Amino acid sequence: MSYAAIFCLLLLLSATSVVGTVDGNDSTTECVSQEELASVKAEMERRVDQLHSQLHYRQNVTVGILKDHCSSTNTGGAVETGDTVFMSTVFNITQNDADIIAYLEKVNQTINERLDSLEDSINSNDNKAGSFLNPAHNCSHILHQHPQATSGHYWVQSSPGYVVKMFCDMERVCGCDEGRGEGGGWVRVANINMTRPNENCPAGFRKVTDSGKTMCGGQSSRCISTTFSSQGLLYSRVCGKIIGYQFGRTNGLLQYISDNTVSIDTSFVDGIVLTHGSPRAHIWTFVAGHDQISTINEDCPCNSNSFSGTLPPYIGNDYFCDSAHTVNNQPPLSYLTNDPLWDGAGCVSGSCCTFNSPPWFCKNLSAPTTDAIELRICLNDGIDDEDVLFEIVELYVQ
Image (cartoon, rainbow, N blue to C red; front, side, top):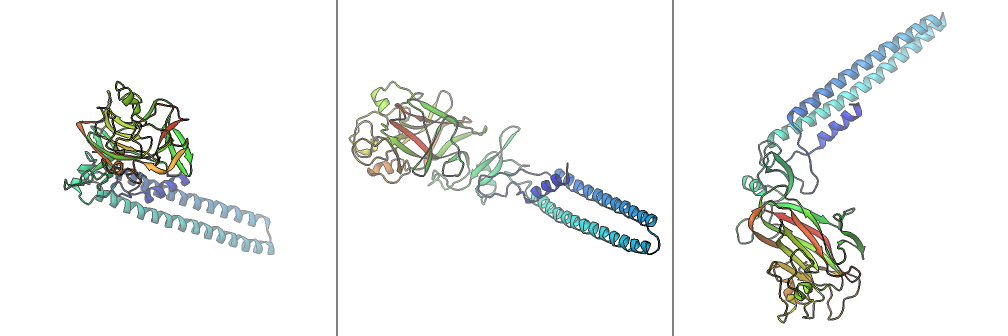
């Protein structure tokens, strides 16, 4: 390993935060063991000693060459001049080497101080639940052991012998625990935010930018999907939010209303569907209605009490419905970015902003599972006529 590589490694180690000290963002850090610290410190000391030897050797060789040269080529006054040059050269070499050695010793001292500080931090965090050496069973376990724990990345043993770092939200992230006298301890399994620079859509989804908004859209007349792993963590509750947008003439649950034999595996809705497992078990559906005014079967049931359609039994009441078109006519064939979907705001029909209290949903599953969560955008027509897009996907399990 080169000096530059060793130096960079040491600087990286000295600047790295210890697992369990959380910064609240998505960046992750790796735990450094005491054995690794000792090895790095020993290597640094060996390299500095080696450099000391090399510098002294170079100094002695250079001095000898200069002395021999001056003695053999100068006589009389030339010898005296050569001695002056020789002594000046020796002084410069010695001074330069001394400066280099002093600088290296100062760097070595600084790095050792930081390594000692890092070692102390590791020792103080070794036994905390959620640290690398003491991974937690889940985020709730960490919060139970340390009620003042803050949101951030922690080590979790999701299955025997399998330890992963996961983001734990220690606050009432979804509002699901109101009235329960508790909150927090949720594991984040999905975090897509297209407002972040350079954020990408999942594979298969179309990345669309319009009117300053960047979104992920579907494909014509079918469902496309992506999955979010639970990393083997057992959970029985799901919460989260999806903020989306409407393009053109989406028509809600019309596909199912027109043919109630269509299953959860098909494009039964213009919208986004969350499921888990195989066969698919429903979690939540985000319906994109035609408009916010009319009461035809293409619209949201929450538009009025005169909705005559039948809802799919496999979604029950576990859905949000919204439309960005605020008048009773055909929506334009454009991206309606002025009014986000499922954000709980801007509803002409107020009940669509209160039914199930968007933007956050909470779902208790019928049984604990380790299934990945599947997200599908489903459309029953071409994307030149309709599209449903998401900007933010944030999902948690517990």
